Length: 311
View 1 (cartoon, helix red, strand yellow):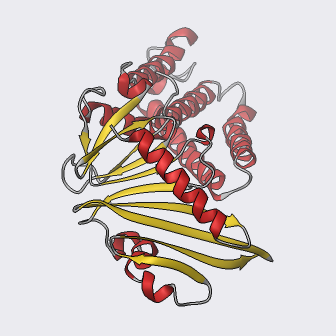
View 2 (cartoon, one colour):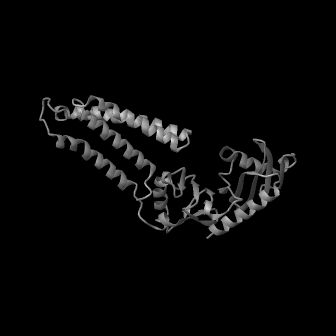
């Protein structure tokens, strides 16, 4: 059940705003100023969202999302008023339900929707949800732990373009699909590409990301500069800012540059896993004067992660 998926949390927020607006409609005749509270709650939640994400675009997106939810909630309140008519507004024509019956018109649907959402995002406890899944790319099988952040891509085998496997609540829906594909962790999933970002507690400082990609997917439109470095290693290594060696089947390339008055190095290594698959390791941007230490750490980190994952 936990962590709750982001989609379920958004659904719960929507239901809460709907319920709040509906109760405001119920109290309209007696407490007109209370109609301002939904907007106050929206603004307050939006400010909190911006603050919790450091004022970034993600928080702004949450604020716009809540604005949409606020509008849906108000429309929902108006819809409920139109359908129930005099049954909702005390003192008007109609059946004239009491306060408790009127409240049930709001509470019961909200509880039903939240309950359905909670059940839909539930994932049964299994090897897949608690520990790891097996993924086959090319001729090798990797055992991926949930502590890593992993992106899997498929050309045609699952009907999904890409799925993420991690401990993050935002990937809960993908976890449900992946566990179903893996028979709750009993069967390897056949994928065409895998990106793994190592968990911080694994102490793999030199490796930012490992990619295992089917050769049929390893094209410039999909991977841009990563493919360009592999295909042009001999040309690029002649430039003063690059240091590298190798060819399409294996090699390394490092680029030295300056960012914010700091000397930086970015390295990439690659080799063929088999005739159908290539393995790439990225160091990310590292503050360093020379590439040697960065490249050594990258090679060590990639070997440590890959060896630990191979079945």
